[in-house]
Length: 323
Image (cartoon, rainbow, N blue to C red; front, side, top):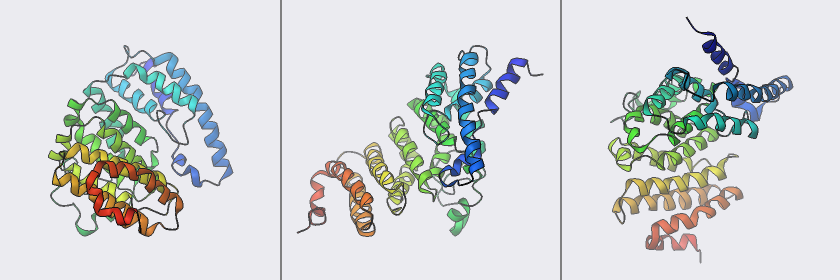
């Protein structure tokens, strides 16, 4: 039977469950819904304050309770229309007690509070039990289209912040164990048709590359999946997030290439050429001529790709510096 302390924790955390309407906050025009969400956002600060006072110390909490507390609080440790600067600071204060989580806690967070959200939409290119690339996509020709239907995970707008917290707090040696829990939801976001989710996915990959061993990316075949998806991100050229997506995708692609290929190898050269030749010159500069912000974003990242490619940039000089 649950103790009063357990019941209090559960009720407190339930009060912090992010309303689904925040997922479409930018397109809301129902005044009563907007007012209700504003009230919830202010109330969330009060509830987080209570949580910080009562449960900052984790000594009296079970591992399951710690996982639920961290997962709920982590939804405020990042960006989103439900996050105020004050609530973010409170969340970070609470999470400071979990700055060095062990793999058991991370596994429980990902298993119970992330996988359950995304499991109804398994990524067609991944083995859900291992996080490895499948020899061929499940579901046949229309697998990707099927993957984009019935996306119930979009009703949990705080999920990317939970994934981000776990990625940033996973030690390099623990990634092998948690791979099957981290990669599928990250790839689902990265391959979504909505640019806002795609941008979140790119940011998660960037965080992942700061810590994950390059060998693990190669052995699981995820390096190729990520590269392909990041390159595809550069073709979403008519959206409000396009400039940010271009900057993030190019920079993250370069980090991925450096992480998974060897210096002066043919593989590194070919992939860098693909980003500059196909991604920037062949896509952005051809199809975004009426989008000055997208063109500006491509010019912002041009020095980074030129520096990475080095002397190999010569083959593109006519496109970069037209006569």
